[in-house]
Length: 281
Ligand code: R5P
Image 1: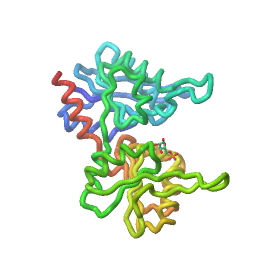
Image 2: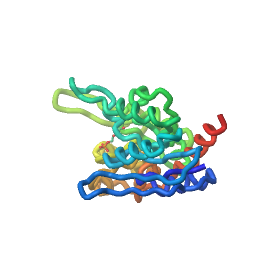
Image 3: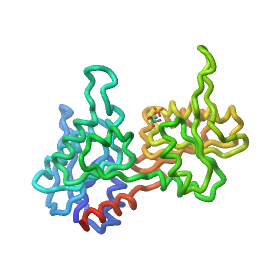
Image 4: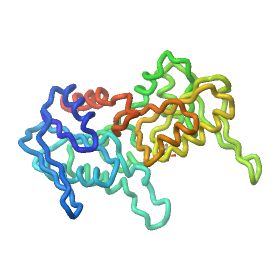
């Protein structure tokens, strides 16, 4: 068995290869002087597992080139972070539904596509055979037996937070936005009192950090003792991490679907288990 480690997730790829007792394929990734990208994969035999997330446009192009290099085989594709999932509908007339075309191309070339916590069910619906892995239990595990409560920054992420909180064995809630009058909107936890509590803000993605910075403000104003931020995908654009720490958040915790310094939880085991299940079929 071979793991083809794309440039997005080298460490995660090596961990997956270890767990599967697979070889790492010999690869070359480079950029030509005009900016074009180049991929070469040498001497691989089936089964082949490709690990490449989509955190940037380069990642996407590398992924397409990897699929072409392996087009005589039927690779299992692991996309730890499925970028372009947030553009999952036509918000304005004439917009591209980005994830639709990404899904189509990936499924044309790969035998199976596995991803971790895709942003929405709508995004997932553009795939015919997407295999979805949930990292929320791992976030729950991280906080197990710690005296915390978990809060979702909005109703949309509540179901995810529920999964993490169940594993952590803690209470959970979400921040509710209430319009008081034309000028005032009040944001507060729907049911729980956070006064003197350690709170974990849980979300699927932290990108600019704006959502969690605002949520941290609300919780600190409501008397929370300490705030952690936990997410699956640490997109963390530009100075997002600084913004989070400056807002009073004391620790940021993420998985390694995107490899960052805050990637304290690895999804390698849950991905390897899924791959093993597929190979048994
Ligand atoms: C929104 O639907 C997502 O669940 C996240 O809350 C969002 O992507 C976070 O983005 P940012 O960090 O830029 O506020």
